[in-house]
Length: 315
Image (cartoon, rainbow, N blue to C red; front, side, top):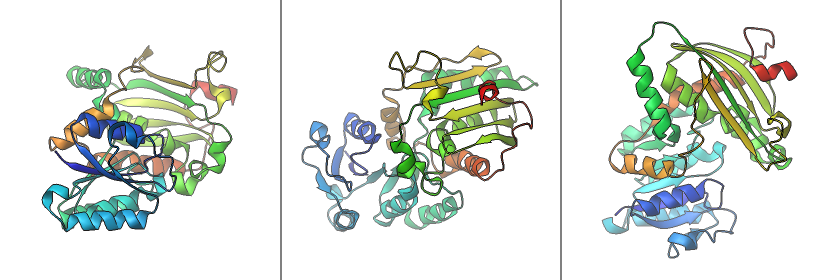
C-alpha cells in the first residue's frame, strides 16, 4: 500500500483521483485546498489530514519525508489550476514523491525542461493524465490504424463544444496566462489523442482565435485534421440545451463517426494502475501536445487559409 497526498481536493476532477486512490487499494494521507468544502474526503478517506494553506501542507509532507518509510508520502496527485501545476509538481519532487498531474502538465512548454532536470536529480517521476490513450475504443482504433499502414492520409474532423456560463470568463480559466485558453482547457487531451493516433505535426493553421471559441487545421503525418473547440452554448447542436445536454463531442475519420462517448468512468483508475505498475505517461508523452497548443495560441488567426471546420461557415 502506498501513501498519497492530493492538491486541489474540492475541484471538479479531484473525485476521480480520490476514487482511483481508493480503488487501487492505497491510502490518502493528506489533502489541501484553499476552499474548505472538502466533505468528499469522508467518502473514502475520513482520516486524511486536510489543510487550507499550502505552506502547512508542504510542512506535513516534509515531516513525513523524514519519518518512517511506512508514513512517507509516495505520490502527490496535482488537481490544482493549470498555472499552478508546475510549482506543485516541483513540490512533490522536492519531498521525494512521484507526481501525478492532471492535464495540462504545464501551460508553457519550456517548463518541461526544468521538470526533466528535477526528475533526474530526485529520482522521482512526473506522470500526467492522458486518459484517452487508455479508452478501450481508442486503443482498438490505434491498433487498427497500425495494422492498416496506408500510404495516404486520413481526413479527420474534431468537434468539441461544452457549455460554460459567465463564471468561466471571470475565473482563472478565462485567463490566457493562467489557463492557456480554450485550446489548453478543453482541447489538450484531444490534441494529444490526435498526435498519438496520427503522428507528428507537419503544419498548423488557426482560423478562429477567441476567448471562448477556437478553430483550425492540422497537417499530421497520417491525417489532415479540421478542429473546432467552444465553450459557447450557441455552438451546441439544435435541441441540446432544451434536452439538458451540456456537451457535444464528435470525431470523424474519413467521414465515419468514431464512437467513444462511453467508457470514461474508470479511466483514472486504469491510469493509476499503470503508474503503480511502473508504467504511465510522463513528460515525454505530454510534450508534443503542450508544444502544439502553445503554437496554436501564439499564432495569428488566418480565417481564409486552408480548409476550415464546417461550423465556421456560421461564424
